[in-house]
Image (cartoon, rainbow, N blue to C red; front, side, top):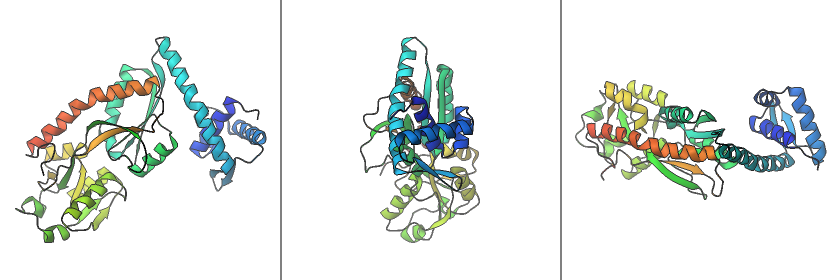
Amino acid sequence: MNLTLHQLRIFRTVAETGSITRAAKQLHLTPPTLSIQLRQLSEAAGLPLYEVVGRRLRLTEAGHDMLEAAREVHAPLRRLEQQLAARKGIRRGRLKIAAVSTGEYFMPRVLGEFRRQHPGIEASLRILPRSALIERLNEGLDDWYLMTRPPADRQLSCEQVGINPLVMIAAPDHPWTQAPTISFDLIAGTGFVVREPGSGTRLWTEEWLRRFGAELKPELQLGSNEAIKQAVRGGHGLAVISLHAVRLELAAGELVMLDVPYFPAPVYWHLVQKPGRRLTPAAEAFRDHLLAEMPALDQQLIARLAADGQPWPAEE
């Protein structure tokens, strides 16, 4: 086959965006130009690589094979570009980070400081639900994935980089703030505000309830930490949430952290990637930067817990 790197790059971008129009904007080319290149690539392959269903582009089996090859070609070329730049003393390159939703409370600041130290590196950050992040991890689309519960059903490279205490929150006037003990009847009759199935905080909520022989019966299911906080403030029930997400509300007295058994939950952040993937200089630099930044943030969280009389790690 007579394929070019330019054609493979176009095909990879179109496949990942799912749209010729969006890919054209990203590549700064016109849609007709992309269509011509895709047609020539399909002719070279001798098989159709995609079909258009509605407004979405859907890959054929041959198209998935081509996409896998395009990614395998792209990764070493991108790494070579950055390695050569580093040899010239130029700290430039591209960095793609994906983090679960709680990362929105500190990752923009961490990445912003990294950009100030490495102004030549083009960086992007995606904040995603856990399920969407795992999909990107499976496809190997990013340099790093930041999450608290890496999938246990596959081999992954995981490095612990910081703490992510999960706490149980309530409105200041919730009955549990005055309850001297937590009984089964009290637990079984209380509503919880939760995230979507599969989220880390929902999994922890279910596990906590099972310790007392109770099952989760969601009062509300919401799609963001901000919505969870507003629902709890509005009296819709309790919630398990990352301490990162509620520091301001706790300080302002708008929410309270409940002193209940097994909380704060000792959860940790992990940098995750597929095993054997070679890191670019930009990815290595970001890892070092994150490891340097997280201890100070950890101490702030530990101090917040101590102020509420809840030591870290949680004492069982």
